[in-house]
Image 1: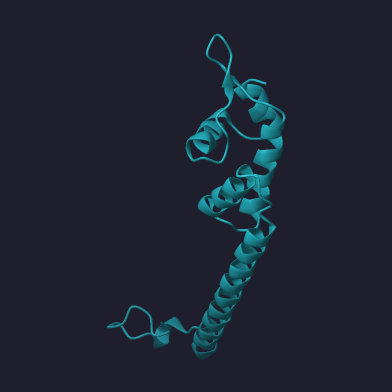
Image 2: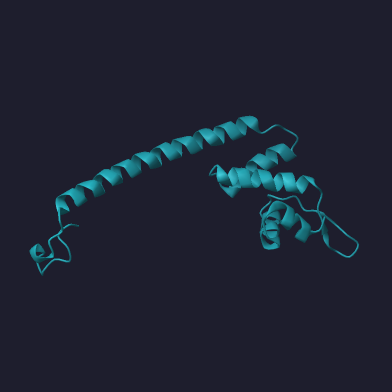
Length: 129
């Protein structure tokens, strides 16, 4: 299938496909005698994997690593599990940071009360921050 057909089948753009090919996420396709890219049906499956990896929060570099393991003829399952474990650790850290930030902002808001503008000194931008 040509690049436009693959883009339509994968729900993406031809520009994205060229980028994925350049980034090593999509294998270089065969070329027709006229020089057009000629992708196989396996490219749709590969792009679906890339999309699922991105949805899980993996970077394109991490996704490329998984694809390289698969392309070398090995099952990348252990590598994927390790990546997901790291992703979970990162998310837990982000959630902790967000809880801390939320508590800080809630404290600022509680001290602000009814926000009486008449009580705001002219030499300050805003006393609540």
